Image (cartoon, rainbow, N blue to C red; front, side, top):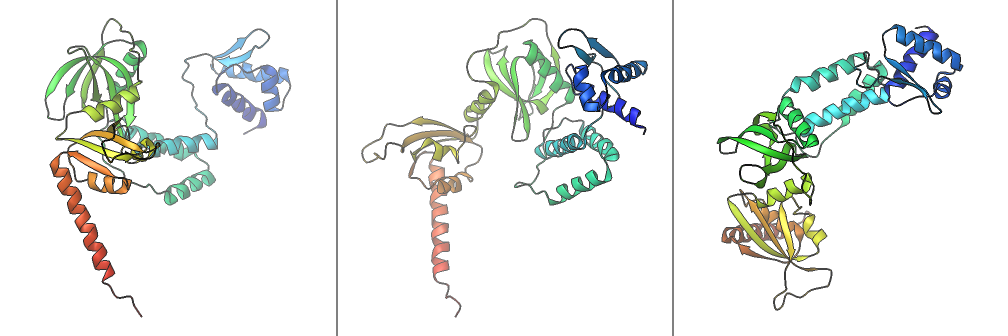
Length: 337
C-alpha cells in the first residue's frame, strides 16, 4: 500500500471515530500540510464517502450522520476489545436468539486480525478461567428486545404476548420503564396496564411485541434495576422465610444481597441488645428451595433466629449435626508419626 493511500485510509479511520476534526488536527495526525488533507478529503468524496465540511472557528470535516460506512476499520486494540466483549456476552448469556450472529461476527474479525494479535488473543482465551461454569440461558428474540428498547426510550405502550413459568399465555399491554440484565437473563420492568400494577417480565418469554399509539409519563422513585431486584424479593415462591440476624447491614448484604432479601431494623427484645453498629435486623425472603439457606446462614457467622418456616430450623439443625460429626471424626484421627 502506497503512503498516500495509507494516509487516506487513516483519514477515513479518524473521521469514523466521530465528531468534527479540524484541518490542523488531521494534518498533525497524518504528518502532512493542510492542503494535502483537503486533497485526501476530495479523494474520499470521489469514492462516494459522505464527508461534510463544517464552517466556522471550530470547523473542519466530519462524516454525514447515520451513514453506514464500508469498510469499518478497527485498530488492533479495538478489535481485541470487540472479540472479548463477544466472548463475555456469550459466557454471561447476554445474547439474543440469533446466536450465530456473535459467532459470525467473531469469525469475520478474526479473519482480518494480524497474526501476532490473533496469537495473543488465543493465548488469552486459553489462559482465561471463570469462577462459575457457563450456564444454558433462554435468550430473547432480537426483534422483541429492540422493539421494547424503542418503547422505553420514547415512552410508548407496547403490546406483547407473554408465557409465564407455568406455561400460561396472555396478551399484555406494558408501560415499559427499562430493560435490565441480571444474572445472565434479560428483564423488562414496567406497569401492566390491565391491572394497573408494576410487573417484571423475562424477555425470553415474550413471543411478540409491537409499539402502540400514545405515551406515558415515567414514574418517580427507584430506577428499573432496583425495581427488578425488589420484584424478586416479593415474587411468589414456595417458601416465605423470616429471620432475625444480629449484625451490620454490610455483613448481612454480603451473603443476602438486595435481589434476594429485604432488610429492616428490628426492635431488640430482652437479651438481644448489642453494639451500636450491630443490631438485630429482620430479614424476609422467598425461595423455591430451602437447602441453600443453612450454609449461607453458617457463613454469616452471626447470631440468628428463624421465625419461619419450621422446616428451615430442621435443615439448620441437620447441618449443625453433620458438621459436629465431621469435627468429631477428624479429632479421632491419629496423626502420622
